[in-house]
Structures are given as C-alpha cells and as structure tokens.
Amino acid sequence: MIYELRVYHCLPSRLPALLKRFENTTIRLFQKHGIRQAGFWTVSIGESNQDLVYMLQWESLAERDKLWAVFQADPEWIEARRKSEEDGPLIASISNSILNPTSFSS
Image (tube, rainbow, N blue to C red; front, side, top):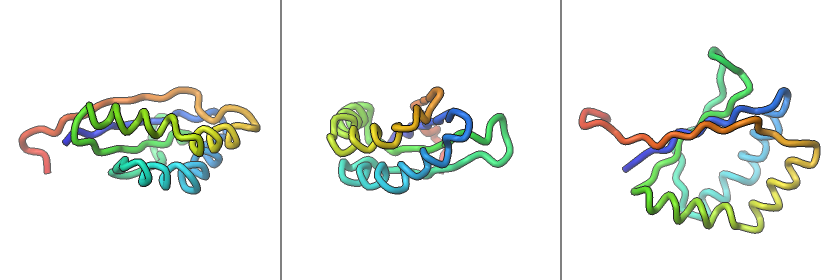
C-alpha cells in the first residue's frame, strides 16, 4: 500500500469553492473510479489557511496511474471542473508526494 499526499494551495478566497466541488462531485467520482481516500483536511494553524490537504490510498503506482488517468478523462469531471472555475481558477499550485509506509507504521 502506498499513500499520496496532495496539497491544493488555493487562490485567495477560493477555498470554499474548491471544498464545494470536492463535496458535491469529486468524492463521488473518486468512488465511481475506485479511488480510495484516507482523509481530507483544511489548515487551522500553519503556513496557509487557504490549503486543502488530502491523502489517497493506492495498491501500487500502476494502480494510481491507471485510476487517475480514467478519473481525469471522465467527462463529468471535466465539466464539473470547468463549471467550478467559471469565476476564475481555484488553485494557485498543487504539492504532491507519494509516501511509502515504514516497517513500524500502523
């Protein structure tokens, strides 16, 4: 099992729109395509309170590549993303890390 840590650094005042997109569409599409989430967080104390942090679980990098590509190509996702960005982009940048658990990880 590997984990993917993703941090979406939102443009000023755009975090609520990103959260709405995840809550109303993205999570359902993740489930549709077999993408397993480990959790989602916003930042109360830290460098920026305009970030969405989340983790995904994968059996392997091959599974990640396959499922992520299918998700990204889904016409419903493409339309939801377009619609959520009608008032401008939501995300300034994305940080992404693939994490491997240590032998002593729970």
